[in-house]
Image (cartoon, rainbow, N blue to C red):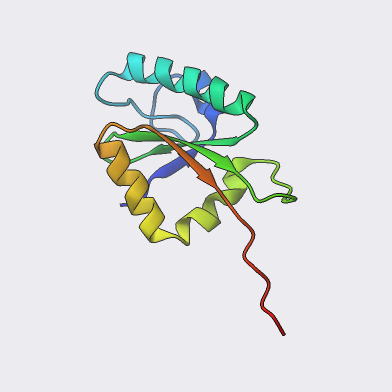
Length: 116
């Protein structure tokens, strides 16, 4: 089960199912959106990239990503292919959402260059 990856700007739009909109969240949409806004502000202030993951069953996760040192990341959506390449990590994030742990902080590292 893969989530929809959304930027935090989706919180500025009304709930819906159109592209770029965050569908209603469960268990309590209004409270969940309030919590998401507060978490987004906190995480962004700390300098992390932010993505909202919306799972097909209505669960959500706020993903705070610290890109590798020296990596130029203008938009957190650029990191989606890297996340999708790690199915075990995505499964862990989904499990945390099911347990009510809504904030996940990832620190990405550059892979070590092979020795020649």
